[in-house]
Length: 410
Ligand code: OVM
Image 1: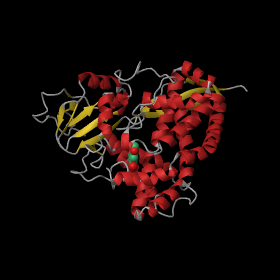
Image 2: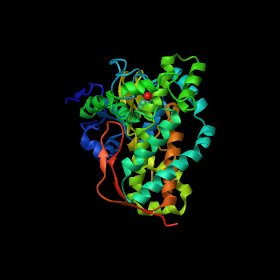
Image 3: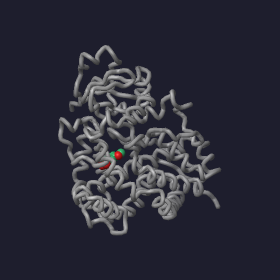
Image 4: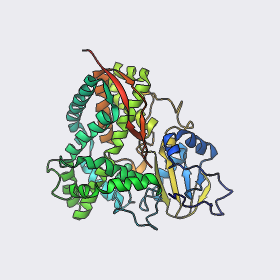
């Protein structure tokens, strides 16, 4: 395995900013990223990661600044380590994630027409009912795996139905998402293994995205209709829908899993949630800040520029540590404490600016429904063993979360 892209900083860079040899895609870093985040934040507003030959920003101010300046720090050259201007991506670029204005704006408008607050309000009752049913079942079971039994099960139940996907083959969604997010990182073992496992899912994903394939009453068919009306080719309609199958499952699974873990580890916070189940939405928001299911994304400098006075040459990759910004003590009081009563809004866990997560309202709906159900139907959530992390070059989440649930006695 060779994941060293560059070991020498260009002469105009070395000496002028901190050069660090930490590897943010190593198992060790991914297991506990918090010390590395602090090292980078303390070192300066911009650091050079010599192992990959990229700039990195880990403070809230600079992460926000890079996210805000989408015309200088572009997405069309890829939001992973690879520069699409130099290397061909493994799949046709996303029309949303891996695009810049004006194309990005047009694609986003197609989706926003459908995925609006009115639609989300209409989904709430059904999503809550499903969450209640799943939570009641796991509460009765007592000893559960919070990942398989709840964090994976609930999104895999509500999301594919809502999109209108086939019942058969849904087991392809998680390996596909894992591959998409792992391949934003360097070509390390995680990358290669995810590509190997995820490749088998590609034919099913591709098939599900074809026009006429999703259930005519679902969101997938609506995307096709709206995109067709906006003049998109059938291939591009399918590619728009592909974004939802790529980004819509693993992310919410990890958000819900991290929320379960945080509530089990902070019983006083769960008590506060039970005392007022309406805090479910705030509790999920705090989870996104605290755990940051999406840890990192890259941008590419489209011309010579600067960040915090540091010169950034054209073509540079900039690694944004969203998770570190979300725990930057310059921005947050007690950043490392999980507190569902804090004002977590303003976190960059969903990004920020023109590329801010398109599915964030859907993610919040899922998270809120699960946490609301837990608040009403569960008396106690306790750790019942050691949780196991799921390593991913971009995502932070769990593979296994042993919990003991005590149902509420009504
Ligand atoms: C996409 C896509 C894939 C992964 C993540 C994402 C966080 C989008 O295909 O558009 O946004």
